[in-house]
Length: 189
Ligand code: GLN
Image (cartoon, rainbow, N blue to C red; front, side):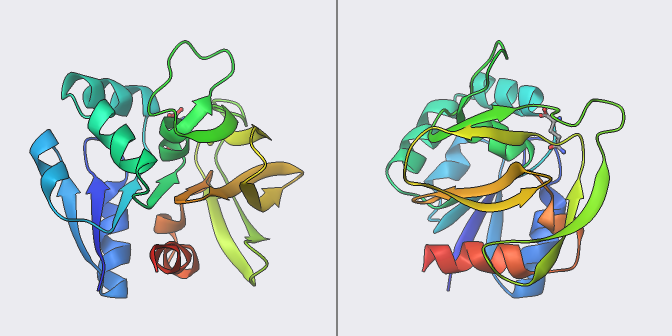
């Protein structure tokens, strides 16, 4: 039985909670550094506003411990802003956050105004899953050979995995399809 910590400083953490509840998976919210001491088998970084989340993590002194835990192998699933938090390379963006995953991510890649859309696409060779994009980033480039591309839409990389790290540009927690969360739970083992 897994226990998943969900970063709950800002953004769509509630929807991840509901998804895990639906799957019958134990979870708790991470709101302060002390929460990082609770035993967890995996971590979810939700969508939201990466700059706001990053600032809060920095103010609360959570960037360094989180970075270390992930680098040590803690399985992590970053959706949308969560992907931005994990990326080592954010191109021209002035800020970097956890910098653990070898991907170059473009923020607001679909434009700021018309950036929200819905589509269906294949993920990791499985059947099609619903994909909701909200001012989403995409991966411009994978920068290490062990990054596996899991999904593309219109030729852009929108899901990938590197070792213990899984990222999606879209929000699987906003649709009632559990495939992506199940994929993450399988990754934990
Ligand atoms: N545009 C947001 C950012 O740059 C991400 C949007 C999302 O998480 N839905 O952080």
